[in-house]
Image: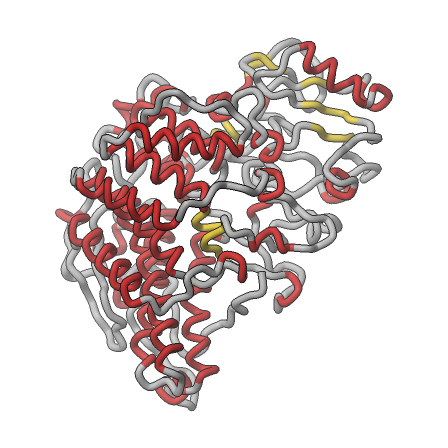
Length: 570
């Protein structure tokens, strides 16, 4: 995890609103010219760091779940409701503040990436380093375009850094955006200036491996969106170039292990192809300088003085998502915390689980959340492991019929009613940082890397691509490698639903479920079945809203766009 130390750019202003004029305007507040500052190696590296830092504005913010998980089958309301507009669609409009922020932050990232190339020729560095850093920034720019095109469809296409004021760019088609992304990535790979892989060296810098993985994702999405069947084979080939004959050798629980002693070396596994980088040991802010992923997909489970952990109290796993995990799937226990001690007055702590080596044995358990597939016999077997501390445990089933998790009073209630209470639902623990958070109740002190692309995801990209290319046998082979690591039996058939199901279990909390459903044309079907807010009426409320709305402010500020450029349904 050693890493790129992100520095704040002081010479290139960042926009705070969507308007094109604002985020394309350079303002130099230093007595040293921009050319002079960035001609030094140290100055030039601040440009590169700034480009990478812009990824944090998308991936390391509390809005991440709203951007990428709202309006899907996997995540539902808890004590806090998900954004009405994005989760229910009916009232979604071009003034939505979340989409406005995402749109603006992606273009800030693109501009920061292109600044690297703009100033590179004058930098006093070796040609090899110049080429490497420019190509790293190009990958970063493509990543932002990947987010934009998968969220909004066609968008204005900027290909160079603009030092002066520009008041408008025409909206490019999705075809044009995808073509540009593919051209950029294939050129970067052909040049070969990037490191082959940075996964075991921190993972924060873009590499050939990361570029190929992003190319595979891009070909796959473009194949669906543009109805180009030949792109699916290209996606499969790019994915296989990343896989390179490898298997998934690290146990899933070890891959996502939260180390109580502060050894973050697990973040440098070869499976984590590209990351948004964090490092507590070298952080300029050892407290409050991390991110909030530990709080995601968790309901309220006690305050800091109770021994609980900070939570967002929203985007709790739906029962459908939980039922994607089969009995025996080792990923379930690595993803969810099934036991909680009494979390009042800090007699016990959520973090004791990690302090004791990944176990609450020996600690009185107040609440047990059995998985949907656990039987009465399974629950009794769990109690028998530590009977003294489990005899009075409240059993809160993760099933259609559950119990009040807060006071354990009254009779049966539904799963959806249960997760509306404090302590409702199994907390997600996949992203816990048990080193920095064991003594803090914080939503800014998770210092684990945020993994943008993982190897197991690329196996699933390959499975989907081969399926769409008509090679079901190879698709099944790629899918079953992911299932093998989960200690599940091989699947005997494969379709899009099977792949989407596997993505739930392997990638819970990661990536974008909304992208997955939109891409595979399952957005209406899955919301109709599993989004409780619009269950049974998804076709009516989603209608033509199969893309997010382009922010009205972006259209108004762009003299080459008009209302005719808005997406259907808005």
